[in-house]
Amino acid sequence: MQIASVSKPVAPKNTETGAVAMASKPAPAVTERVLADEGDAKGATLSDAAKRRLVIGKSQTPIVPPPDSGLETVLFADERTRIVSTDQQPWKLICALEIDAPWGQFVGTGWFAGPRTVITAGHCVFDKKQMGGWADKITLTPGRDRERKPFNSFTSERFSSINAWIERQDPDYDVAAIHLDQDVFPAAEVFRVGALPDAELRDYLINVSGYPASPGGGTELYWAKNRIRAVEPRRIYYDVDTSGGQSGGPAYIYPDENSRPIVVGIHAYGVGGTPVSMNLRVNSAPRIIPEVVTQIQAWLAGPGN
Image (cartoon, rainbow, N blue to C red; front, side, top):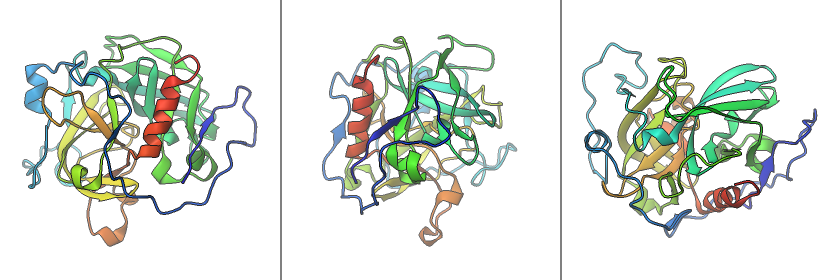
């Protein structure tokens, strides 16, 4: 399917008139690795503490969860860990979103793919059913930890998404960008974005981070890990704990401890988004496929970015 960018109108209208939606076609298999950034993969150094925490590389066996911690149970025992060193890599690249929309206020998560471009879920910038259309403005805070804001906050009224999301809310294209007016992080430090072939993607250990509404009220960064359980042409599935507010967060891998993280999916859905036929209790992300890489590259290269 050919996709196109749709930006929030400068003067919002009652009827959205984005690019014409096309009928979905079966997604072609991803046959080669496609990265949005082929530059220096060693531009972001992890602390020793982060190396001990993050999962790196692949595994043919799942991570066995610890006994129930007594926190909210998400899939089984809640395995999320609150991150407090949010001024370090990669945590500082992840943003708490405060979303002001026609029908109320919401929280979400985003992450830096460029010096002034934050990627998130499409439903964090445009949702007819819950938000009343386009967000009016979004305040994002990279590396937030409660009231601590090590890199300040930024407010934007410029958003873009994909026609398949704007026109018909296709969950496989639940992707968007928030455009800022100034650089926040150097290009060498931000997340890489990658479309990996099925065979390469399977069995990768995956990290998922975000700002849930509970616990933390959208002000605390949580992280969890496990193995990718299933791969479909437009979706990846993992048994990693998440909850509302973490939508838009990065689902990312580390080929090795010296590489920059590669985002392979944009977390958006809980177990309700998993087909019953899969017989898996897992969460999922719209998969980064080559056409999404191309679109993100276009957003990064767009006016003001």
